[in-house]
Amino acid sequence: MLHQPSSGTYGTITDMKNSLLLMTLLSVLFVSCGKEEKQVDNSTKSVFETISERHCFKINFADSSYYEGLNWEPYSEIKMHILWPEMLLGKTPEPLQKEILAMAFSDTISNVASGIRSVLSTPIFYDDIEGVSQTEVDSIPQDFSSYLFIDVAPVHMDSKVISYEVNSSSYVMSAAHGMYSSQYTSYDLEKGKVIELSDLFVDKNKLLPIIKGQIEEQYGTKDNCIDYDKIEVSDNFYIDGNVLVFCYNPYDIACYAQGIVKAEVPFFNLLGANNITSYGQQLLSLSE
Image 1 (tube, rainbow, N blue to C red):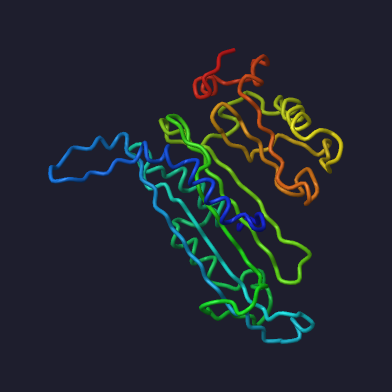
Image 2 (cartoon, rainbow, N blue to C red):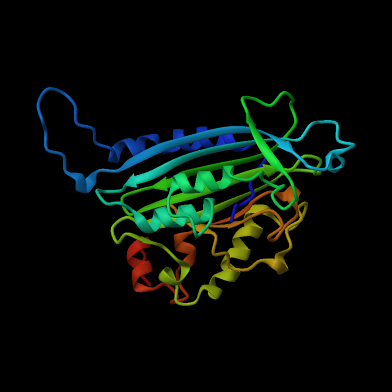
């Protein structure tokens, strides 16, 4: 399933993540150079592959009346920027790779190349219209078109955990506005597993008042369109240092104008309910 994300966020998100994570990624990437062969301890080596794609298409309709009345011809633009985790601490992180592919493309996709082909194979947003096709072009001869941008990159990495974001942003010509979302996952580097809430907590529902309180503290109860009655414990979360971040995309709990709502819960706020599993205590360096 392709996830829809934030308009105009593609370049900014990529630049910001690259800046924030550069030192961390460099600290785990070892490159052998010079005249002498040196043994490299692969158990501490991490390698990321940068994959960038940009494609422009002219959309062809069998029935031209479909786009009569539009001020622009139907074109689409697709951009994908993926910082792919080839190796993390000397191991291929297959569970993380599988999770990233599922978030960015579909849970039936087995590799990045297949995911990219699946996006490019049919006209995005128009594939359910009979007789529609697309022709790839070098550029779009107008300032206005449908688009889909997918950005995949880590948002946090330390000695225990790496957290990834899949951000997607899309717009369909003639729509009132674009759509965007961010999906997250965190990965235990030592155990080689994707971290679920059930791994960390005995009963995730006990987190609800903590999350509501955090959102109220961050956003207040006035001058926003957050529906506090709609808030549930989101499985769309990630670990960021000493904070557990719960993410709510547009329309999950608030109107489009509110944007993505994040409850940034410090680890120490999770104590006191005897709700943290032994694994969670070890991973989060907490004790109850």
